[in-house]
Image (tube, rainbow, N blue to C red; front, side, top):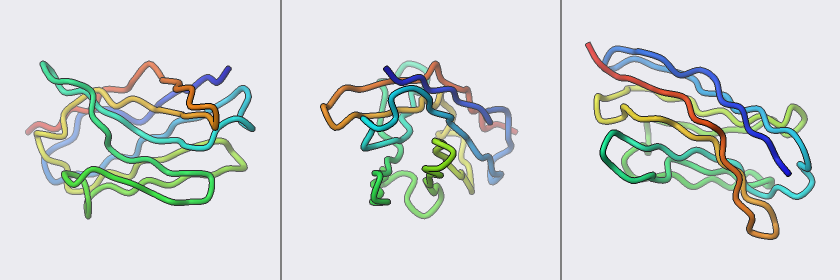
Length: 116
């Protein structure tokens, strides 16, 4: 089992920045990929960005050039640096982990609101 706890969400003005953190615990030897998904009001959950143990990253076109994902393997933590935030980035952001056995784990989510 793997537990994921997010932090760092909040209210920010358009054009501002936020940094999300997710601390993972449990059977981390089984985890290959960490990442972030988001769900906006009235919409489905969508990929934001992922990063593998080897450092390979993948991100949605809508956040390329604005969001950066990184991880600290020693601290079992994944970060999402979000810059140039837009109102359409408003969503609940969920931390995500996938094991080598293709089991998915989810955090409870942290709300990001981009509004003036």
